[in-house]
Length: 286
View 1 (cartoon, helix red, strand yellow):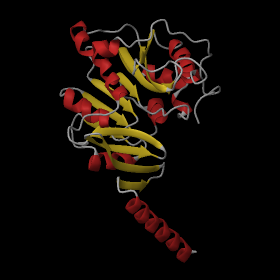
View 2 (tube, rainbow, N blue to C red):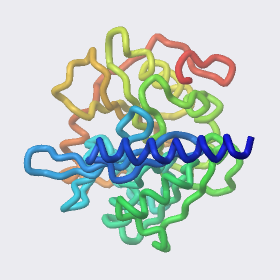
View 3 (cartoon, helix red, strand yellow):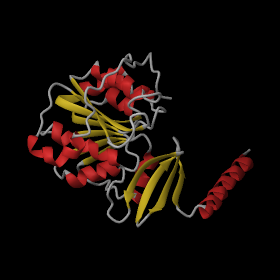
View 4 (cartoon, helix red, strand yellow):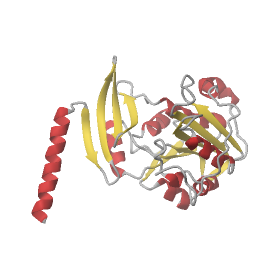
């Protein structure tokens, strides 16, 4: 049995070598406890991007020359700086390539960010390929399941960012009333939660945003929805940003012009006829 096991490992290793030779855009091909991960170089016109792909989905990418984030939706997380002007302690659930934490630490020199990322190999790849400075004193990483972190942490935050949903195959345990209630409990007064959701606004693929909107409305004092790409049809799946506010927002009006392009993409009068998602009723997720 040991010989068979060694043989299978050798075959798998050789298979990866052959696969990478035939796919020269691949820099890293890693199997972790949770998924298969690829780091690739992708040429697009005159720009080279470095991408992180998990299983069949593209998770993150950066401009290899400028190191800027490629995903437009990530910039909406900066809205915490507008809605809660005193925020200086942020939690991100879902690190992946850590492109947003790296952006955050470069932009907000005096603010702290904690990251709950379940997969240590993801963190290692981010250090090796995506310019993550793991020794930055303003960064703390917890290799822990996101729901478990919300359930048991004693920390308090001004803002929680969720980047763990990849379409309808989302970890349902982060979509429920109970999860969001725990999130609200660890927010400071006037704290906010900002979540990236992939869903259509209307039509057959709109269930996710409507279920989550109903759930957030049952918990938070104010809820907003933003459309990342204003040109997209409302009936196609796309990045939507859901914002929940505990208490009242502590807006920094001096920064309106900085975030105006994002704020103008708010979907006015959004509504939902769905019931809330609970641990016992989760019609979305895997």
